[in-house]
Image (cartoon, rainbow, N blue to C red):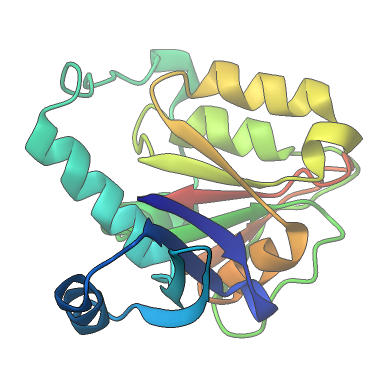
Length: 206
């Protein structure tokens, strides 16, 4: 059996499955699991089914890691005395976020979606930056993972490396920038910064 996934329209994801010589009973069982037979070639059956939305995939991954007890528990960080998060609105946004909730921390040019709550911190060019906000929030609210546009690896590799250094315990998911925008529209809130680095935007995932 082989499985795989591929992006679909508007950020949709399809799961794909290839089985060699499945019996009628096996095909019936796969159909009950939502698999649709697409083609048969050389005794191999090709099937697909709609994949779970991003937040559901995060939930499933969190459940898998919790049940497997992967690695040590996440350490509790004590915020440095000289770097306390003082902004009450930013603190409230992250404190109210639950598991799989998203918070967008975006650069100055990001088209902030109309739906989520907006907290605008942009004062001037690169004041503050996305990483400034992350450095202050991470000791209080460590994420399960961060989501970054895949284009950032080519446009600003140094920034991606900086993010990996900031959250060594957390995963960094790379998604197409278009999918990033769709996810940002579903976020709990958007924190806008003055960051001028291309594709500096980050999704914090609870």
